[in-house]
Image (cartoon, rainbow, N blue to C red; front, side):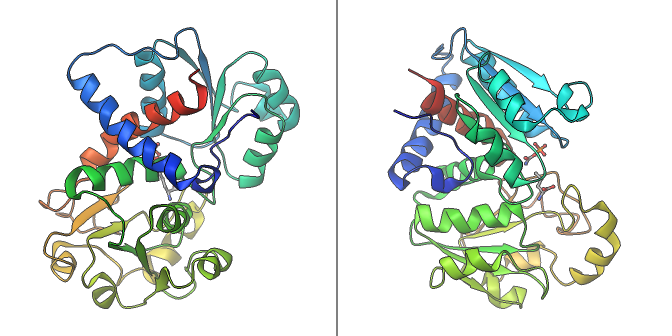
Amino acid sequence: MSTRHFLTLLDLEAEELGYLIQRAIELKTMLRQGRRHEPLRNQTLGMIFEKSSTRTRVSFEVAMTQFGGASVFLSPRDTQLGRGEPVEDSARVLSRMVDGVMIRTFSHETLETFAKHSSVPVINALTDEFHPCQLLADIQTFTEHRGSIRGRKVTWVGDGNNVCHSWINAARQFDFELVVCAPEGFDPRADLLERERGRVQVERDPERAVKDASLVVTDVWASMGQEDEQARRASAFRDYQVSPALMDQAADDALFMHCLPAHRGEEISEDMLEDPRSVVWDEAENRLHAQKALLEFLMGS
Ligand code: CP
Ligand code: NVA
């Protein structure tokens, strides 16, 4: 069988994604019980980071350690990647040595080019366009707290960014309704909205958008690479802050998620992360379990 990659949520079948969520929950229990499970012994994951990271880096490194393997951290600052060695060449060389590659970069095309020339599985650890690993952890978290997300209403409040794009893909793969509530000019990609017409809607008014939602999700107003737009965005998004008062307009059992890092006083109120409806710390922890399920699926024998 040809090498499987995970560049977006659409690279796996819905059934395979469902399996990963259940497997992530199982692997979490096994870890809690102290049961050793080392399906990737002697395997190595190459980790290319062209943008900063806390959760993604640590969760992938710890995942490989717990699985009996190892990881190599590669930054453009001290590899030939930063000195212009073609992505195609780097992919061919690295995939002759490591068993899988995880990439966090700017352009999604760079990731696709790398994957095209890689003989080992490539995982998207965030591009300007998508962040599929985050969604594995998010769906796992919702499932643990509330059961299946199928048929639920999820509301995204904020920028139509990479994480939002992955929520749109998730709506398709996990079969739920998504409302995107962004100020005009900050909608997600039109082709994605068009493709999921009927399942994904845009609503400008936050109170109307969160009505009956089982889950409210947000993210920073300016993503990595958009630092220069911070001031303009802060003013455009002023009315799009998620707070306990906004959560009161959602369903009674609504949960709140944020991929983190969060900016208190901007996309969330000062007290939002400590609200009982917030499950952000479980969500962050689940990056580990969900990615272990993914690594085992792609790299395990
Ligand atoms: N949520 C997320 O991907 O966090 P990091 O940028 O810290 O990896
Ligand atoms: N949208 C954010 C997510 C960070 C995990 C960014 O791309 O910076």
